[in-house]
Length: 203
Length: 267
Image (cartoon, rainbow over all chains, first blue to last red; front, side, top):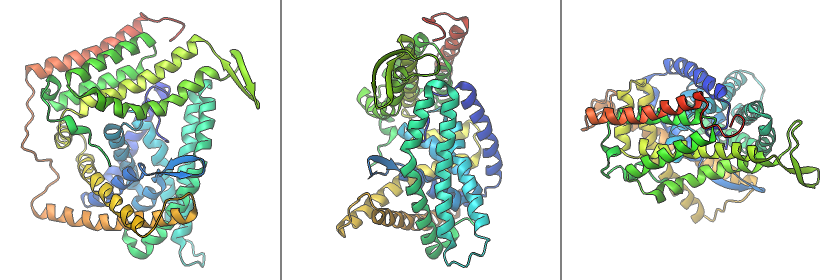
């Protein structure tokens, strides 16, 4: 639902979206090793599949976005992961738009990078609790979605006055998803920390 | 289950025979050109051209329409909200007012603007079918390599595309085993915890498998290059097609700049 379709945004906005995405993509890809391909692809595929799982939560039907999860597990490489997931979602499943892939990647990818930083630096604190992964996973997951929705609403609102009400509508519809993703990311981070810690990003 | 976009890649049509590299670039240019238009007439002309392309590709319209439904659901709110809300000084004609929400009609211009948004979104998605749906996905990915996309990105596309179906299968299996133990999805914390842990386990399993597959491929000489039996060859007909589609994309922009076909102020 955080995808913007074609033809809605101001051209200047999605054009600069492509430029910024190209820059971040070039930088993050330079940090990527060829051995990272399997891990990255599995999580990218997971982000793709998870966004297709809808479930009823209260009055709305919601689905996972998992950008915070990508950040916590992949670190910097969450950005190419989200880019690939969005491209495939657009071309295989017709979710979102073609011209808006750049800006949609920013909307989801930049919060993912922030979630990663939060998780990475958070884990360094000694809080005296056993599973810090759960705490910082929850925070990262929640903040990543909240920021993604915020970015989306700002973009819609700045495009034109007529989109202001749409922006408010979109933001309200996402409040349950923020809570769900926060809990999801927290639980999975805790689970992975005990089962397979190398899947979490600690670099 | 996820249905594949390349289900009709085995057909034979002028679009199917078109070199995938030129096809992707030309149709992509057309998509960007249509989205850049702010003129209802030209957008409609672009849409008609797209319908002709889909027709030429022989991909059944029922398949395309089925996928377009989703896009329509996503853009429908814009169509319903834009013409009927108040904004700034332009309050439009008030139709009804309930609980502080004013329903008003902003006139034909707003309806035209909303229609244009919906048409643009539908056109760009419709063009994906002749663009990607007319060759097998592995050939499309090889075409991306031929277009000099970064190799790491091409590999990620190839692997992710494979794992989507693996993970989808695995998820269905996990769900079935949850259901056989009496689990039902409800809107509570317990459901969320269980689903989260099931998905996390899915990751662990898939990650290990992905690693094994990757090393097996490496040991058999995989170097990151996409290898298929298909070799690209762009002849005269490929370039004629490309010039036709690309030329049309340019033509739309020229027409928009010349200001022809504008019906009412700015739209």
